[in-house]
Image (cartoon, rainbow, N blue to C red):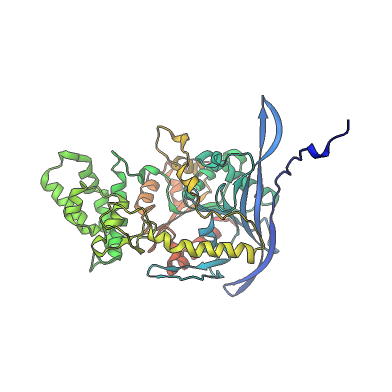
Length: 488
């Protein structure tokens, strides 16, 4: 019996990589560099087992990457850095166009935010002279998506995120013959959580040992940042950042920033946590002393500090600090100012520092990939996926503190040559620097390995490279780290 072609069903074509390569040049440090940019989506496949039998490697997701490789370089000698941002649910747009890549967006800074249309320029401080760069957008961010029939939510969680990003790194390394190249990770914010987990995962799963991990605006122990009943730790660890922000806005006059944060650190490490631990047993005169000291360090009124029982929650601080001036300050970067429609609210849900930079970055990326990198996709480029952010799963930590400090420590103990670079901004109200110091001080590594960790500070916020002097200095610091840790 002949087939009725009108009733035949055609199986959809399997997804394939849609990478596009273009050639470019940039002048950095007086030297003209020629490089290849490769951008597009890599198909991730996993072996599917049914009743213990393999059905082969099936496509599960398409992950968007942008790679920059220096032309005519020795692959064995040439370092490569895999970079990503955090969120969770963030694309790699920030590190890509703000700090590391050969092109960058001019976004302006606090008090002088750029106006549209925005400018994209050569990045004279790019890390390209020192390392090839591979920017990765995890599933549901950028142009990365689960394939038809698969669930995006399967990737919105700690372990699956590590596995999928780790697989992208393995594939890229293998396909480009880079197993013996010096290898680095660069993560920002939740990207530091991912990077610390990946350092351990890449070693244990693939035997891929790294030269270095660059942690920018760090969160390794979530208990240092999460304000919840019974956890007094964040109140003390955020205090030096509150003091820095108050100083920036002129509420702590006649003192330098260094003096202010040193004073706040001493109080946050001593009498303040002692006072909170006493609860309602604290003597009245001791409590009054703490109220006075907190007011002097934060710029808040003694009445407000008394009413919140000595415990200043961060979102409330950003709303309260300049309430009398009818302004709010940024969470990601406390130097930025914003407005609210209602100045009686307890805590603003808006972040003026994020609002100030999302426009320039989104415009630059959408123009750049099409006009300069030759890649077209009708999907919306998800700068920050709200679905992934709201529904992120930490089921692996159920009943326990969310931490990857143990994984980073294990990676360092297993690979004693692994170097760690840590970057913090004094005005970062999302991942405060004193919380990072607290975590690093308690990292379970031998004293001999403590020298493998370097820490740098900048007078800026979460994306410290928004601040031009910080951006230039940070590029110098990262370049020096890569050159030293490459062991070449």
